[in-house]
Image (cartoon, rainbow, N blue to C red; front, side, top):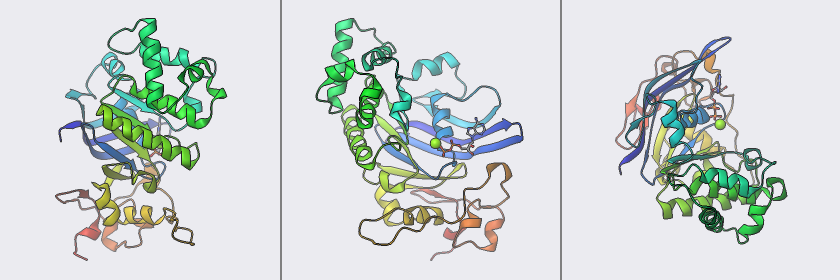
Length: 321
Ligand SMILES: Nc1ncnc2c1ncn2[C@@H]1O[C@H](COP(=O)(O)OP(=O)(O)O)[C@@H](O)[C@H]1O
Ligand SMILES: [Mg+2]
């Protein structure tokens, strides 16, 4: 599969009042054309910052960036702000955690959808725009698009608003859709429904999806491949079925163990400790203080081992089990 998005060794440091904070510390990530990739990890691991870098949405000042980020043949880190702006909302679109917060309560859905349509390559006349909005809403299983278009976001349920967001994000037939914890603010049934709709549409339109979540369980049925992120790096990456059946990195195992199971009466084990303070990272593996299989060597440098199907940065894998 050809890479639509290729990120190599992406490093990103914010200059804060308390000094520099290295938030991304060498991220390697690819998304193939039409592929569905999940980016998973606890809060603060750098998922949203990675998404903003891909969108070209990072502040120009107070940020130091290194490494490479190519999208569809363009060098995103070197291109002009105008070029990035032209791509946003057309070739790459994004949906966010809370649809209510992303929609503007002052305008009707129709007014907001019409604004989205102005970003398309080709300007649409009023009748074409109306037609395009209705089709897009029917695509996300909205049976009465007319009523929804006439409504304000606060008059619609969370699930409907979420579908409206998906319709808006896909109407330009983007090459890549970034979904940053979509529907986390909604209930689980609605979240699963919207994932299902998003998945079907990506398949019919050939849209690649980078799906960001803190919950490994949610991505299982959705993603072709999973990348697990910890403290600004991808620590493990594998096809979804492989990752679930044979997780290698202790952090991935801990994340999996923290997913609730219907078949069990017991509550899952939360991962002990907390995510490290990125401003004060010591040498060695950042997961070491929380790792059940940590060894003294883990406090030194983290050896990097490349496997043919994934890259793993854990010393555990040096010795065969
Ligand atoms: N504008 C900013 N200035 C300084 N630090 C930031 C900024 N944005 C995000 N961060 C820090 O970057 C780290 C990663 O954040 P984020 O990508 O939002 O995590 P995630 O989406 O995985 O929860 C966090 O420690 C966060 O505090
Ligand atoms: Mg986030």
